[in-house]
Structure formats: structure tokens, C-alpha cells
Length: 546
Picture 1: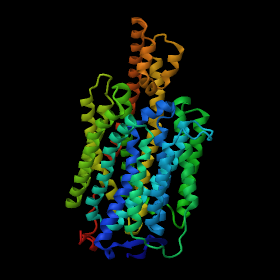
Picture 2: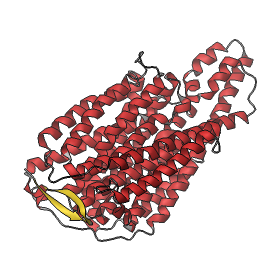
Picture 3: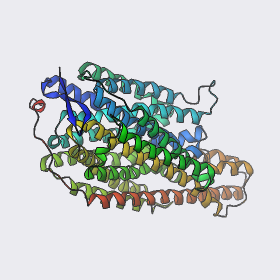
């Protein structure tokens, strides 16, 4: 079994638990890597499998006004959980947080699948799903923090690139399978099965981790930063609630301004608390390292581009292009395939050459250009053109996925890899969470504004009420056409209505992609200022048997 040792880092109070994996057998190392990949597969599959099912979900649960919240709720709790569990796993070891996260993920997946069927709960089905996804995000955050931190335990930076690439390829594989599987399950069975499918994957991951992942008992007295964790949640939650209200009430409304001001105060208190904490969940000394700060900013911006694509490209496919969820999933496959190829090959290339800055610059350039071209989509855009742009996005994301995590782990002290990795996942999630909330709110508000300015013809009140939910309207198109097909004039009128709806939705989605391109361009600028440092370490003893 592995041997634990404490190592002082930064200050006398900063003690972290390190694992000597050189004492592990070849079987334990291989089993550990497989178990970690299964845990990552569990978290990654659930993020992408939802995307192609979302139009069907909001149509059935009548939740277009909360379209982004199914994703945002997950990202919010995951964002808050990542640094907390990253720090706890530094203090007490990884194994039980991995097992606990995987177990809770399975249970909350079952709750997500049953959303809307809890008659005794005083909330509608969409709210039930959002709450369940929030709980699921806690488990997802625990998995993300501990999986990537464990990679830092296993391998030194010089060798870590190829393994980071392999784990990123697992993420990309799940991303590739997720949309196709999600669309197929939605078409063949129900959207509920996109959550139920996590159960068998989770049970296998739990079994492998329990049997083969090494347990390192805690040594010494530790302190948990409860105040920092509470202030972090108090900062994020009202900020997202405020952003979600912008689309309907505007930035200057009290419902927006008051939560934003409260969040600013909580952020200040959080920073104050972290400087005073004995064991801060986000150590200030890490943020004092320039290369860590630059990479964290780039990760934050990069995830905005990733999640804008995951959220809004399926909406464009199913509502504007009129494809089925299964077809939308197949159109996403080339993106995920390119992401997997570029992620794995990029990781091996970094490991072989030790050069990673140029890869980040090239990847971000491709990603920025692809998002800009997506912002020029029209109702007449072809599926082939869309797939080509998605492949560019996959190449850009895959090329950059391993780089910034590697840069952060290489710049951070060895004894703080868990906290540093958790911070990278935290900032990635912050970008995705706030980005998804802002972009989702802007899409909803601009869609309604565009629709008002489109000079819609007079239509029956029952049909007018459906215009606020274009996804549900698209699902009901055949029934609507049948209801108003008594004469040619009515049919022409309904076709005109759908044309106006598509035009309004396309303009709002184009704006989302344009803003995403601007944000990713900021990370490209920062990438030019990254100081490329030699990657530490050579081949560890644990790898000689591999």
C-alpha cells in the first residue's frame, strides 16, 4: 500500500498530503487509472448527454424561460464543490471523496430522471429537474476535483501531459457519445433515460475504485475552511439568480441590482476569509503565481465558448433546421471526435516536446474563428456547413484542454497540486456557469425582442401564447398545421409565423455565438503572455512497469 508523507509548502501551517505511488504494484496503478477514467466518464457523460435532449425537455416540462438553468444549476453547485473537495482531498486523501461523489452522483441521476413525477413536491417538473441537477452538481464537483488531482499525484509534469491527454480524451469520448446517445434515448424511449443511463456506469466505477484505488489515511490535525466555503456559495448563488432575471427585468431592476451588490460584498468577505484561513480552500499564494492566474483566466474564457456551443447549437439544429434529437446528436459527433483526437495527440505532443504555448495559441485561434463563423448562421445554413464549424470547435477545444491544466500543475508547488487543480476546475466552471446564465438570459430576451419587431400577422390567441417557447412550438408544428389547415390562407399564415419565429431565434443565437467569440478571443490574447516554463520531472518509479 502507498505511503503518505506531509510536506510543508509556503507557510508552517500549509501541510498537504502526498502519495508515494512508487510503492504501488503495476496492477494497482492500472486499476487506479481505469477507475479514475470511469469516474470521469460518469461526470462527463452527464454534461453532454443532456444537450440534445434539452429542446424535448423544455417542451414537455414547459420550461423555455428556464432553458439554461438545467445546465446552470449543475454548474453552480459543481463550481462551489470543486475547490472544497479539492482541498479536502488534499487534506484527507482522494479515495473516499471519489467513492462518495460517484455514489451520490448515481442517486441524484435517479432523481433527475424522475423529475416531474413527484406529485407531493410543491414545484413544477422543470423546477424539480433544476433542483435535482443542482444536487447532482455537488457530486460532479467532487469527482472532477479528485480525478484530476489524482493525475497530479500519479505522474510528474513531464509525463503528465500524455496522461492528461488520455483523460481529456475520455472526456471527449463521453462528449462524443453523449449527444448521440442522448438523442437516441430521447427518440426511442424518453428524455428521462439520459439520466438513468448513469446508473450502470456509476456502479461499475464505484466497484473498481473501491477495490483498486489506494487509500491513504489522514495524518496530523487539519482544519476545514467552512467559512470560505459558505462565502463562496453566498457569492455565486445570488449572482446567478440576478443574471437569470436580466432577460425579463433588465440590469437596473432591484431584482438584479440587489443580488449583484450582495454578491460583491460576499466576494470581498471571501477574499478576506481566505487570507485569514489556516487551510484555505483557494490558497491566495497560488493566485500570486502569474502563470497560474493567466491560465485560470484562459480556462474561464475558454469554457464560455465550449458551453455556448453545447447549449445553443442543438437548439439551432432542432428548432431551426428541424432535425430530430437523434440526428442532432449525430451532427455533434464530428465535434467530439475532433476534440478526442486533438486532445489525445496534443497531450502526447506536449509530453514529448515539452512545448505547450504554441498549441494553446493555435487552438484558441481556431476556436475563436469557428465561434465567429457560427455567429453568421442563417435559417438557410446547411447541415454540412454547420458540421464543418463544429469540427473546427472540436479541434480548438481539444488542442487547449490539456494545456492549461498542465500549465497550472507545473507552476504550482507539488504539495498544492490538489488545490491548484481544483482551482482550475473552479474557474472553468465559473466561466461555464456565469456564461451559460448570461447567454441564456440574453438569448431569451433578444428572441422576444426580435419577435416583437418582426411584424407578425394577427394570429389566434392560443397560438400567440405558444410563441414564448419556440422549442415547444417546433415540437407541435404538425398539430398546429393540422388545426389550421382548413384553407390555403390559414396554412400560409402559419408558415409565415414559423418563419418569423425562426428568424427571431436565429438572430438571438447568433448574438450568443458572437459574444462567445469575443470572450474566447480574450483568452487568446492572454495566451501570448504565458511564460512557457520547462516541465518538471522525468519518469517516476510507478511508471516503469507500464
